[in-house]
Length: 259
Image: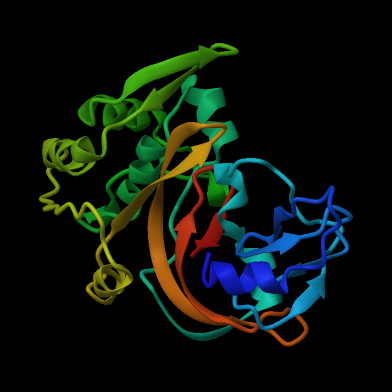
């Protein structure tokens, strides 16, 4: 959080029993609030604004809180500039679990990428059920194996997998090569936004991988990248701060934006 000391001074007046709370008013807006949760100070210290009834008081970040669904994003943000490689073919988590009895976010991201690779004028695989197509579910298992994905736990008969980030690129290259598709990869441990922009400019695929702290544990997540945008919150949605976002398949339900 920026300007912590200033933010604390501007925080709503607290009685002696109050300690103040950090609240999330939207996926990208946080502030310090009083215990009555009547208002909070924005991170840029420019305004004290009411807390909406949808503000989150979760004690830890959940990965599902972070991506902003495309429908919500476009109703709240004004896009100033953008670039895309095109829509990603994808299968939802529910579809994947039902048809493969497995799920791993990294495998799901690569499965989507494989669906937009073309060999001899045809998609390398079918990765979506959109338009009445039947996904190549066996290829999901093949990508799982090629990337050395291991079973982290089993719940309700579904294997949930974990993939090491260093295995993503080499494993996927091996998988594609075995199908006759020549692919090269590179790995950046801490990429900057400009690197993703360059990938999009070159019409190249990227996988965004990051970690969040949830209930004291580190939880990773991987998403296929389809583009980037520079956007500003629209009037009436304070604070009007510009941000850069990646346009991704969130790995669960659909396309989303992530800061």
